[in-house]
Image (cartoon, rainbow, N blue to C red):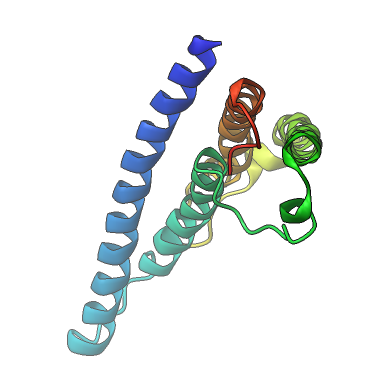
Length: 164
């Protein structure tokens, strides 16, 4: 399962680069919007829209990165009180349930994106097809699937307690 780990690591590197680019574009767009609105008295109609689309992508990509780092919010006070073997079992069970949820979202989102009315939607000010914003869901959740499978194998290989 070294292939899964390598794929997960490669996806994570891509996610980091994409997140940095999107943060830069979002900051530039918002800064330009402020300068044009309050300094030049000629507001940009597209800057907020670009920033919102970047924020949507950053949010979902960040969620996927959080899965990779196993750094998401969790209530662990019960699991922390368990011995190694039950802790590992419950941790794996939680990851598998998350995997099933994420897989369901991927399946539903691809069906949703293939509906005809999604292809017709465009953003209000720049007229960009909304599918580019909507693609953030299946792309990031597909990345999460790879990270979760890697997390399952990592936890199965670990000795003692589960990896946290």
